[in-house]
Structure formats: C-alpha cells, structure tokens
Image 1 (cartoon, rainbow, N blue to C red):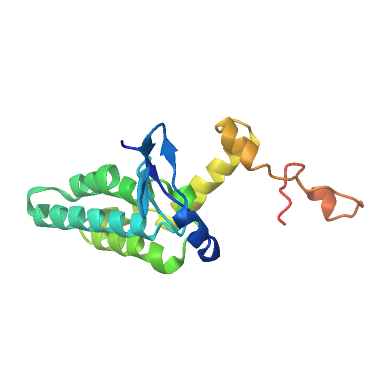
Image 2 (image 1 turned 90 degrees about the horizontal axis):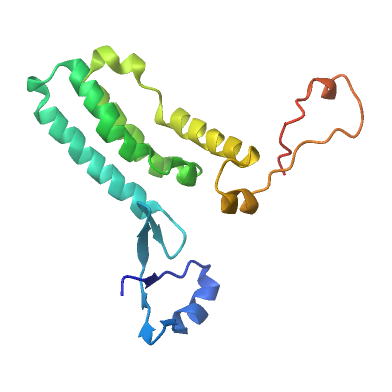
Length: 182
C-alpha cells in the first residue's frame, strides 16, 4: 500500500503512460506527481525543483530560528550550529542536482549568505556552496572510476579515458587517467 508509481518521461510519451495501470498482485499501484526517495523529491518531469524549494524553505526557517536565538549564543556556537544542522540540508544529494540551473541553486547561496551575517568572524571558514557541490561531484566521479561506488552506479556510468593517438610534446604531459569528455 505504500508503493507509488511515478512516470518520469517527456511530454510526448506522457499520454500513453498515464493510461496504463500497474498492479502488484491484485492491488492497483497509485500514481504520484512526485515522490520522496532517500530524502530527494523527484517529480514526473524529472525536475528536482520541488526538492530544492522544500530544502531552501526548511533551511531558511532554521536560519530564522538561529537568528532569533543569536543573543544567547556566541558567534562560534552559531557557526557550529549552522555547519552541523543547516548546511547539510543544503548539500544533501548535491551530486544529483549539481547541474541544476544557477537560479534555483541561488536560493541555497542566499540562505548561506543570510546565515553568515550571524557569525561574521567565522565567514572565512565557509566555503562557497558551489565549490562544495563540485567537490562532492568529483568525489562521486572518483568512486565510479575506482569502482568503489555501488555496482549499479559503476555499471550505469562508465567513463572513457583519454587515448593518445599521436605523440606530441603536449600529450606527453597528459595523465593516463584523464577523462575523454564527449
């Protein structure tokens, strides 16, 4: 009864998929416009806009609560609370939405900027969220190349390494593990 059906498709395929019914045993599986899977909200059109807006709303409320209690906490305590409780909300699942439009991700950056006003002496310790998203994505890419990611992920994404067909001074310095970007 907890199982839901989410059709992720292009608009031209949606009419056919909307007419289909899926049964598990004798039970009709209910359709959903969006589902939450491992903390990430996915919608029918493949967009994670709802996820980003929801997390931004939650994080914004937490920053507001931190601001209201700022007079009771030192700057260091405010910084530690932000890093331990609010920033993880903004970063969770970042390799999935790293290529989302900058306009959507700007909501996260505005929340971090608002929070940074609460601990001005510690702002130098905050990395930009885009940098942290890039690092998380590169770490995931490394795990895929190293085959230490889950086997389904490693099988789905098989990066190709750069091959050198002709020796030149430039390609003598190319790392053998350089990726070929299509």
